[in-house]
Image 1: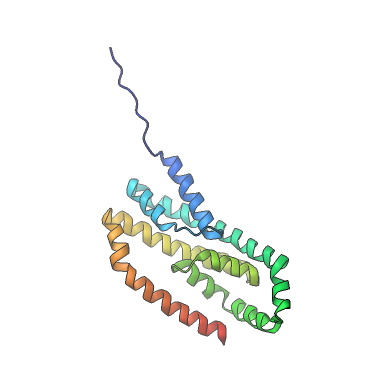
Image 2: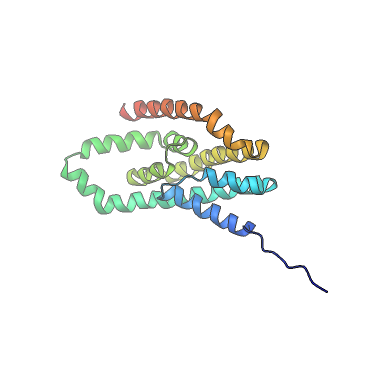
Length: 190
């Protein structure tokens, strides 16, 4: 009697979890990749697990942001101070640091929600040593909002989610990023 051959699934859930977590961590700290397409892919594959994927992505993204913050702090201490001193920008840099620290929550929240690269927010946050608790809270809120929206839309619309993201949110995202960016620049330049 022939026993049926067991076939291996092409993509195990555990690999999806690890991959999504690794992508989310590295995207938030140093690699120029987007987490959203990976979140969409795993959510399309397992829609019932969308909340888990949002939580996993949020947690690993915030941890990656903390790593990026550390990179900004370390490299600034090693190289950045010399560059600022070389160009005699100490007073300008100090004003920027004070302005950024006064608006650390908003700065981090904007970077965590919008398509502005969050890794830049994290590295600049470390560079200017903005308040870490504010950075963490704003990162959690912003990343949870962003990835929660992506996960929910993907679960709700299924494969149509890709079209929703590109067609419906493409222009709105660009408009929001430009508006928020202009506001952030006005606040920081004050």
